[in-house]
Length: 72
Image 1: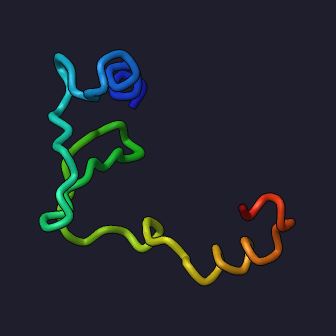
Image 2 (image 1 turned 120 degrees about the vertical axis):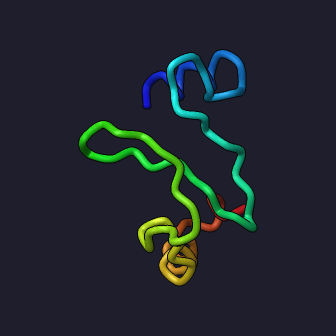
C-alpha cells in the first residue's frame, strides 16, 4: 500500500515496478484493488463490500447538526 501511495504522490499514478497493476476505476465494471490481511494485493470486480457504500442518511444527519458557518 505504501508503494502505491508513494508512486501516486510522486507521479499521479499509483502503478510501479513489481506491483500488481492498479486499473483506473470504471463505474461499469467497478474493478477496485483489494488489500488482504495476509499482504496479498489484487483486483476485485463487481461485488463491492457494503462497508464501501456511503451512508447518505447518516451523513445528512451529521451535516444538519453542524454549525451554520461550517455548512456554507
